[in-house]
Amino acid sequence: MNISGNIITLNEEKNIASCIKSMQTVCDEIIVVDSGSSDNTIEIAKNLGAIIVNQPYLGDGIQKNVALNHTKHSWVLSLDADERLTPEMTKAIQQLDLKSLDFEGYSFRRQNWIGNRWIKHCGWYPDRCIRLYNTEKTRFADVKQHASVQTRKVKNIDADIIHYSFKNIGELFAKPGRNFSGRAAKIMYAQGKRANSISPFIHGLNAFIRKYVFQRGFLGGVDGMTVALSSAVNSYLKYAKLLEYQRDPSVTKQDDFKNIW
Figure 1 (tube, rainbow, N blue to C red):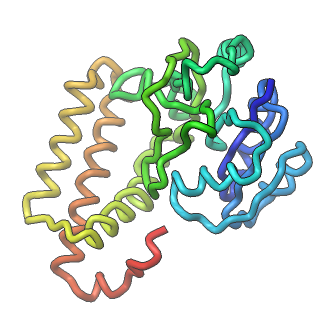
Figure 2 (figure 1 turned 90 degrees about the vertical axis):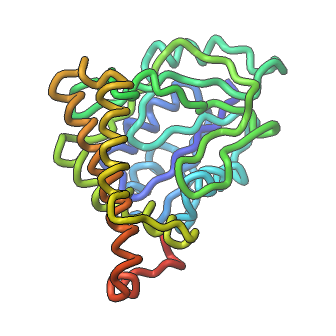
């Protein structure tokens, strides 16, 4: 099929081979946009025939669009390094008529996993996302966080990709504390948003209720509770860090707000 693959990477030596091999079931070229890996990511990708593009990280959507300057096909399949096509998804893509003008993109169901456990509640499934799209018509939004393909001419494919989200519960809690919440707080502070003393508690509680009650995390047993608590912690930390920037100039001076990424 005439599909180009697009993967953005940073130190993904444990994931990149399986991701590329998965994509090669439907793609005849793979573009890897690497943001400075210090492990064997680039060497592994090259050995599997991928084209390497070196690009310091620009943010999620912007980085994913870098590959479009190097792809030879209009249709692009974009996966993260920790994502895989299932055999059912491979078959579904192979059966598509990409010459049709009816759709600009195709959305996939995504299975999110912690370790070897598929999390089916808390809004983690079906977690639809557009990952196959016509670059002559659309692309990822040029935003730095939580980017998605911008089109309404979408067809839902009833097959899954797999996302190995976290290796274990410890990583689930560590990543929000280390990356997501701090980055979000810096962005909010730079945009002029402010918190008050109850903001961390209120947002953390809302996040827990949304995941555990409204997105039916209670049906997921211990894992459902864990994911809901992680979401609450992430939201709490985001607003606690924002409040800290407001209250403690010494902390604010430590961070470079011109280099959030």
